[in-house]
Length: 373
Image (cartoon, rainbow, N blue to C red; front, side):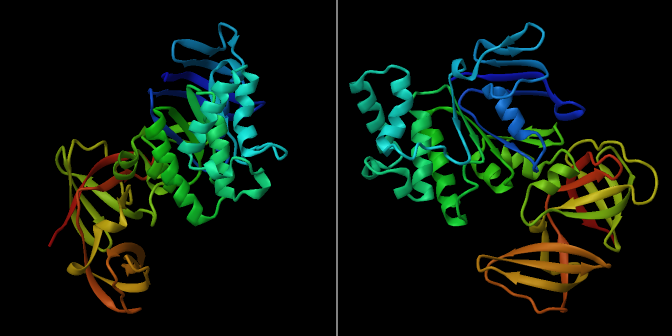
């Protein structure tokens, strides 16, 4: 499987910039998710790599082949890029059986009948749809149709498989099942997968790396747990995580290379970072504290909050606390509940607290908080 490289790739529609100077490398056999809100440019990026959209400028290579270069005038057609594309609506032929749908592309490539039979059987077994071989798409469920679409896309053995929100038409339970199947399929095929989604849970659970885009600009390109635990800026921190990260307006003053004093939630904290802090701007309310809900521990500590609402879900309970007229979200694991309006002590524990610059939204540092006094 090949490496895909995008170099200074941009796409403009008149005055609208859909993708702005994108540079990224997709390594061999990776599972990349292009993540972001609607209209951010993720589908445009996917279509440019596949050849379904022509970039305004830049260069794209798949393996050793330059498939697009605006300066050299190169633009290889999608059919010659050796890729597979899985569409949102599956695009199955309604008048063809499952077998015929999967075999269709192979027939166009002039494969022999015996080779087609062998490859289709292999795909039917891999996707566990052997029993549906003679059925028509209208006789299948949504999940079964999706498996047929994947089998048809993989049958010609494309170098890269592109998927544009392929699970969006499925119900929640089936989406969970198909995420499991897609992850297993990626491991079994040793293919490179490039996957578009606006669902951060899909991106987190499926990807080897997440490419998070905002208004056409790349915000962060890292493994899922890095994006979650070490977000590059406020946008990334807010977009990834459910319940979302707590964002607390605060005032900070640098003390040493790795330490700062932070006033927030009615208390004074010592912030100790794991590496040298970035520049802290002067002035009041100059920073934002980013605290994941799992770092807010209830039942002990030197601060008090009032339970605004408790949402038990069996395995965990989400608790909204009113602290110094600010709302703070905590996640408590286990089957627990808390009375509304009850007072409860809490403390902030963990080395994954993020300090952001309020003006730019960029990360200043990552570390722990210690309540002073």
